[in-house]
Image (tube, rainbow, N blue to C red; front, side, top):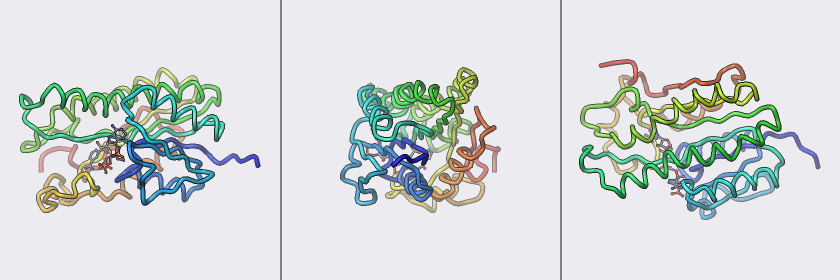
Length: 241
Ligand SMILES: NC(=O)c1ccc[n+]([C@@H]2O[C@H](COP(=O)([O-])OP(=O)(O)OC[C@H]3O[C@@H](n4cnc5c(N)ncnc54)[C@H](OP(=O)(O)O)[C@@H]3O)[C@@H](O)[C@H]2O)c1
């Protein structure tokens, strides 16, 4: 059967924001390649005709190649890439170790670099495509009491690289956008004090996963928006409060 349903790749799809956007895209009849290190063991997602699950470390080029090849060979196209897999690590700057640096660069930067590289040629063939990357509002507005220089170092690449690529590939009608959340109510913060986390936003609460999903879906629908960075942070980037 020939189908024109759009095709998405979602990284970090086993949990939190990645799981939320995968479920939202399934509800919109997308065909999806969902990936994380453990996604084949997910209790929330089951492989099907329209959902491929691929395990792997997204910081490795070979994993990115496998994911893109699966989307093209099974579904024939790639309409949307969501670079969502990522990690956070809060420490004073001088406490970060060589291993911390290495794993954060791999998970937050190499993932973006290799995965985005792999979708471009197919999107050029289609003369259409969209890449949304998940950064953090801390890049714009560091917080006293939340030392996060390594997350900022590794996540600041996304909004600036999305602008660069938006210009480089505009002629191919490929769009690149960023969503920068504040603190989101995901398993990443399951064991933290939410009353304290609420104070990190002027609106005095965490974002819900659905609010990040809404921003991604808006960008996917907004065909004249590229190079943009939407902060979904209850106003944290706007100033002091
Ligand atoms: N939650 C927040 O407050 C917040 C705020 C700002 C930005 N963000 C960003 O939003 C994104 C999603 O965060 P979240 O809160 O939804 O996190 P989460 O619930 O911890 O989920 C992280 C996802 O990334 C995957 N992952 C982690 N390292 C990986 C690796 N090396 N290779 C492949 N997959 C990997 C995890 O799956 P496996 O363990 O199966 O690999 C999981 O699916 C991240 O980029 C994060 O930095 C989150």
